[in-house]
Length: 213
View 1: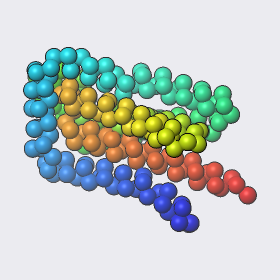
View 2: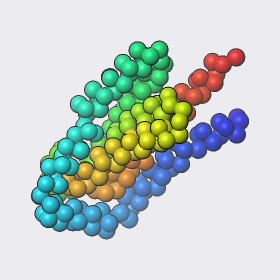
View 3: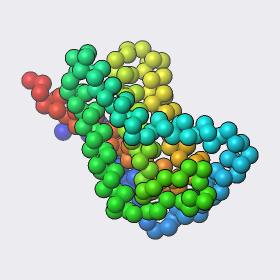
View 4: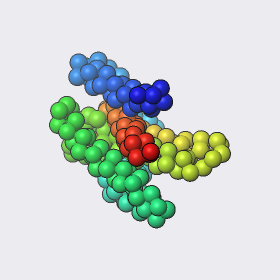
């Protein structure tokens, strides 16, 4: 394997390894103190700024299943329309496999959500890792990279990547502010989503290289 190929796999390996570290820390209770501190801080912030909770609910919706499903279909349709059906399939496969893996991980860790009495938004389900943080990082980072690849100028590429990071960050942060997730759930979600997106880019690049004569 070439040096370029080795470096290509470095990002998904690093991100997924960081996820594993966070998972181990959470499982051993090492995140409990700052998870609780973040939850209390979120309560205080919502009390001091009532409009924050409403704004955060709007940001949170950007990582919800209906919105991301719609955006995934639109992105896949666009890629097909510009003659990139393989990339469209890769985006769809990354999202579907991400959902399945996320469901498996939640079942493995079985972490309860914060007390609903401390939350501005009550939701059912398990907590670790955050689904909104995971899937928004997976989708928005993937979309940012795909769009950046179609632009040659560095400022344009940087801007598109920064927008993807910002959207993923807003969705994840909103889950902590609303009190529906522990902070470590969101951190783990970001690392999982970023690592899963990078993994699929590596797989797509490997298949592309294999097809070249």
